[in-house]
Image (cartoon, rainbow, N blue to C red; front, side, top):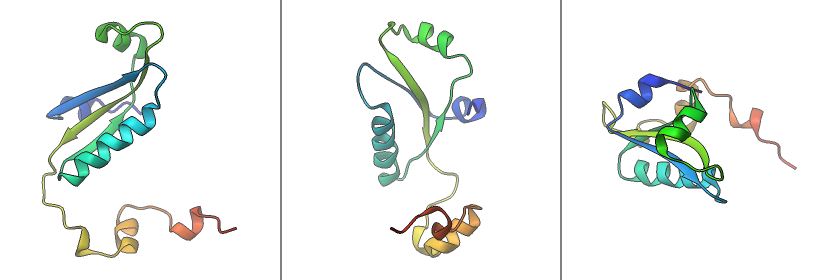
Length: 103
C-alpha cells in the first residue's frame, strides 16, 4: 500500500533492495531492531516502482522490495499497560483463535 504521508513525514526512510536476498526478512529485522530501541516503523509500497528503481540507480537484477519509514512515537510506549487481548481489540484485529489453526 502506498501511503505518501508515512514516507514524507518520517525522519528516516530506507528503500530495501537486494540481489538474491530475502527482502522480507531484512525488512522485518530492521523493524524489530528499531522497535527494541523505541523507534516505530511502517512499511510502504511504491506508487511507481520503475521510477523508484531509476532514481535509486538499481540494476535489472536488483529487487526493490519496500520502503520503510522510521521515527519516534508521539507518545511513550507502555506495552504492559494492557493485556495482549486488549491491545488486539484496540487495534481492531481478529482474535487469535480466529486466525490460528490448531492441528
